[in-house]
Length: 156
Ligand SMILES: [Zn+2]
Image (cartoon, rainbow, N blue to C red):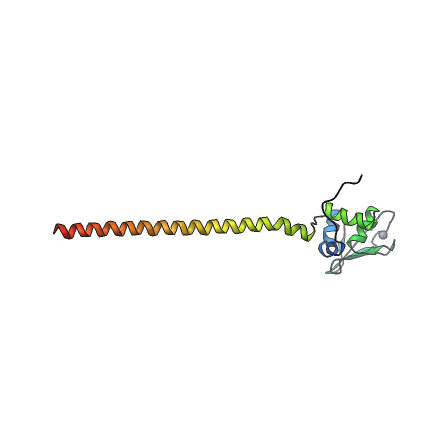
């Protein structure tokens, strides 16, 4: 029986979140920059011997190989590269290429931000407490001064 996954893959979300930069890094694909947005190199796909046929447009987040004719988005690339289905490609990206689906990030991020808020609250409370302590000490000093003055006045 297949291992139960604790999340579903949202393909549209994945495509928006995963850049070809992540993919290129993950597969250690060597590319030469040909313009501000485009890089070119040997096609990393199986059974393709294209030497400089593989182009990635980082702005559009798509690839194209003029030798094997493959092209598409990050999910298409992972499908061709690993010879797997779309669903498997989505899962592969989630498991191996940096990405945590947004709704999961929210769940992870929420306790962190709570902690931060709590820290801030603690800090504020500590600041208020120390200010209160200072005021109390000042009041005590003033009271002592007052008592001393009274004593001095009485003494005279
Ligand atoms: Zn190719």
